[in-house]
Image (cartoon, rainbow, N blue to C red; front, side, top):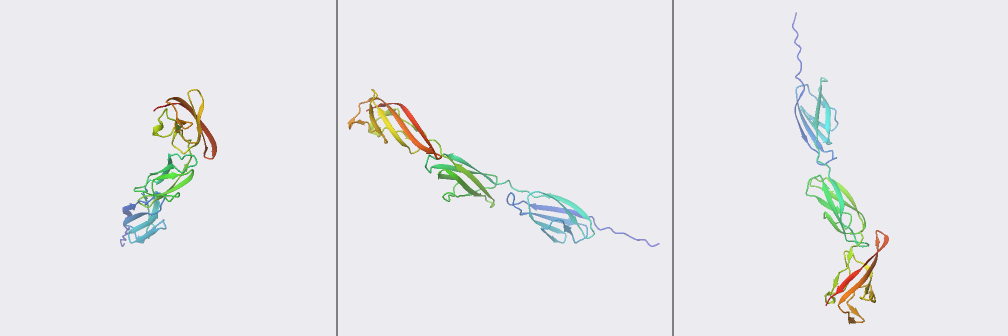
Length: 251
């Protein structure tokens, strides 16, 4: 009887898998390079975006995730493989108010804060085409910013500028040689000011500061009282406020 030798092909195995991460979160541009040994060429893999050269399988346009695939050789032998395509953290943009706008004014500040991604970052706001991370001189409303990191990853942020009540205070001392008696405020105010002497007599009424004169004569040093009233539109809603108090006129 003649001996018959049955020869098995070499075992189909993976020699190496090298991967390249995606450039941005959610972008399908990762790659994997698989080197095989054994089995019988030609090989195939159950992924359409592939390039096969001999025992080298190259995969392109991969998402950032775990891949579980099968390689099949000419004899129908199947080799399960798995590998991970890494991906950078997502680039996100938080937009917050750094400074509230005054009623009816364009003087608020919005700050764009990127999270994730790789710096340096570039910025482009829809308002005034500003390219700074801090958008200044902002009016009430919705404002959007586009942020791009060093990899070319893009993210969008939206912030709403709202108006805040003006803050005003009146001085407790007044020297006419140093200017007018008026409010110190963080916003432009339309107001009425009334000043009374020690006996409760109205000695000044107007919409500008008091110069310290009564009937074109210098008012005497001493104690005075005032009523400071102002109105404004806060985010389109009419509002008013009033400050009452006393001060000392000095010379």
